Length: 300
Length: 313
Picture 1: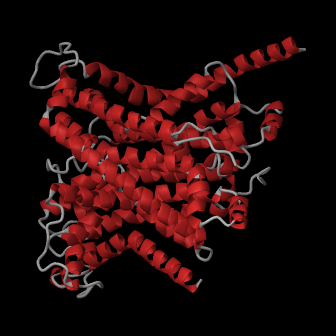
Picture 2: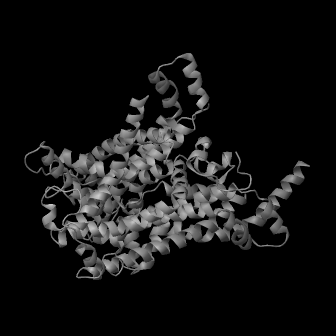
């Protein structure tokens, strides 16, 4: 009996293999040629000289990596990116939780509210940058106009000029754009917590803070991990918003922008690939931290 | 209790205001004369439509309309091609258990975790070697490669949630896999196809880094590449940039308003995918299975029932 089942299964499996591979072929051609092949090239070429300034394509070991790791421009870009990462993650965590808890309690016009909250996510990064530049502009920017009108400041400030304030305000534009994702994920998490747990807690006379700390927060962990992971990956890869709001200025340039400059301004492709590998590894590392550290299976 | 209600309303005003204010302010900037912007104003006064008419028919319309056309062509082709290729791949992954299927699916998952910038430079060398820089096909194919893993994942989840009975019956009647896919599966997973299309369209419409490298001239460069240039090339003409930005955000915003439900499902699926949770594990409703691995309850609240057989969970 068992052998018959096995035989049927394996013959079925081999009968299915050929059409399966045919249907999979287009997808794997695209991924093989445009993702896997370039990825292998990237790793390989980052270990070689590959620059218009260096005629030879000789093996250079970790030289490109150590060049990037010692380049003040790349290090500063790394510091800036760390700033974006911290501010954007924290900002979209708080704003996302706020929106999610608010939506959770909204009964009327819920669909409309959800649509409005999601809208910023649909706005392209470049346009997001442009929208916020009209707010932060020293000339006729909304922020300056409002603060002057309210009498908080007497003359227009250049908000994006300082390094810290620049990174903060650029982060704000990314937070605006990506918080909807976090909010939707958190909302799904909040609404999956069984109401009975809250009812029981109410019977026991637990305080609101205790309910939040003992029930909501632990059961929300998987959602928090997913939301934070998304925000972090997007923050590390920040590009569009910075280009529009601050250009390629050293005070706010991100690591991916520096990768772009290595390759397309300096035409040092080997260095660019090494730098891009560093950023990619960083992204994977951060993802791993969330998956191992924050994400936990929960059961109700 | 009334205090609580007031707080809820206040929070609502802040949240809705935060979400809409930057778009509204751009509308004010794009519809106010330069003189009007000199003083504090929250409504467009004196009112002008000159920026929009400049872009859509006047002095600056040439490059703008060309870039708009490029954006439309590239994202439409990307969306159609991605969904077709993803659908073909999603079917065997969802239905057939052949040797190597797990390993191949892991490859798809692995590529999803890879950011575009990781392969940008070798791709550029590759494409310039083939003399494909500044062509629609290069940009579209690279866009497709970037969106494909998510689309495969999403469609696979929707297909595996369908009962296989109808397909089996059709196969006994002699229908081939492509026929089954087109006649039976496709109509049933329409919401999944909509979700995948929306996400792919939004991603490729917003793409900046890819066209920045591969679309150096107006022959192929989309709106996202043109818009940053308004601030520098045309002086401090914020009105023009605001009008251009608003036109660029109109298609995605309309799509979101129109297909919001599907978008939510796609968003959540994409997010869950990064953790490698398999929606097939508790696959009942395609919507639930695809979106909320551990959050099935919320699905009923977030998404209206999608009318699947066997969906009542």
